[in-house]
Length: 152
Image (cartoon, rainbow, N blue to C red; front, side):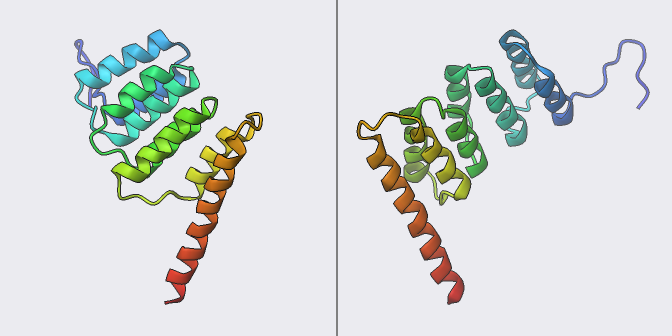
């Protein structure tokens, strides 16, 4: 494609993924998000997932959760990104995990369990160890059930 006379190159998901990766400030990331909306890429799960991940990296958790809530059909990877990104807020991480169980047909995977368990690992033992034990038990049960499914 020849670019000239004021014509801008097409702005596709790769263009925005590159910008998201390079963004260093929340202000810049907000501008990128506005352009994603303007170019109607809000339904591109890869782009939105990277945007949410970058908001979390920049400690804009409220913004990341708001954007996550606007995704029509989040996939397991997006849930995992949010759970991992909320690792400094263990109970918020657990809420996302519970939402995954209640609202989707997805089964948590090894990443899901490791992210949500890791969120609780740094807490003083004020009941949080019970949550960790429960989550660990679910992870072990998942492995056992999957193992029995494979043998059939």
